[in-house]
Image (cartoon, rainbow over the protein chains, first blue to last red):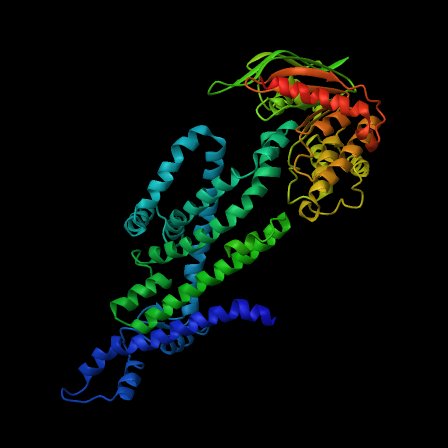
Length: 303
Length: 252
């Protein structure tokens, strides 16, 4: 227990403490301009007053951590989920996080299906092997911010709005690491084991199911973690241009129009926490599967 | 009766690498034949051709009277590779049962068979262990048990003990000899070691490189009952020196 604390918790806490310290220090010069602007022209502002003012502004350039925490606690309330609206928007951070989470997961599942299917096609068909990969890579060179509005417009013309186009945009980002990882994984089984299966005249499906698929697992999980984080980015980006009124992306846009930096940061922190929780829970799943498959320590390397 | 025959067998890999050239050989049922020679002499390639893992570019090979492909489809041989090649996510039992499951054998018959081959290689009691929980020698024994599981009459072994230390190797040689005598299988055994070849075989095929070919076939006059001490006998040493001379001549 003591060892565990010393090895995993202590370094993380040290880094966090350092970041928080730098953050508070940086907030003073970043926000000082506003303090001087609001003060009388010839006023002399003592350092303690300057510090306390820069840490407590209503619309600071850089809100300090405790302001963000207070804001998150204010907004993250269940009582507002369905009821209270302000200027037509629901206010609960939990509600908006849920909206983004649902399209993240939907898009990730789409991306997983697409990615795994493509990698199967690449591994088992020579034509696909030669033709698909360049397009997959090209697809990732197009900025998502450019293609997202088009996806929304085109799908809306087909009568699809809301979750569907958001899911497709998330899929667009998340399938890529999965194709790459899974293709590598399906080709990772040792030649000697492939030969072994051949000597038993195993069918192609038997070789896939009993050898290649289990061999691919240590590659698939890190790819899925990257894909999951990418799906979240996709969901947030998809909420920006769609005129969406719900979701962390939509809220970010609204608050940025109003220069309400503290709620913006509260949304950012929520998105980061969401990504962290998703990736960590996937890491646990990965460890369990790899243990089961006898790949020792494989989870430790990637998590 | 011949179990394996090769006539004018040649194999040229792309890039004009002649792995085998004009190999003629006939192996009778129940023989234990060792293939020995420097690297690049085609001994592993010959075994892989018999197993239908490589296609010859010339000549003909018959395995149990069939083409190598037909023999493979009928699972006429068990193959033991240089590394144990056990699936890390399956227990020893699960690994040994794998070929039986692929053949669609029902679970109860398979379980009995698995238990009996594990006993043969003295791994009874280790069935529930995972490969990483076993030593290298035990892993290789599990791999041999797996090759024995479906009771093919032909056993192909490609330097199965090459990666093991000499003490473990001696013991496994002894066990393999017992196994061969009790099961009456035909064994093709690739090795780098002269004592191993002389100790195990009824016939030693000495091969030479560039292009891979048979330099000499030496019949081993040692009795089939061979305690480890036989290695100090004059008869053993004279066969070993024959093999060594044949190897040296083959280099020219």
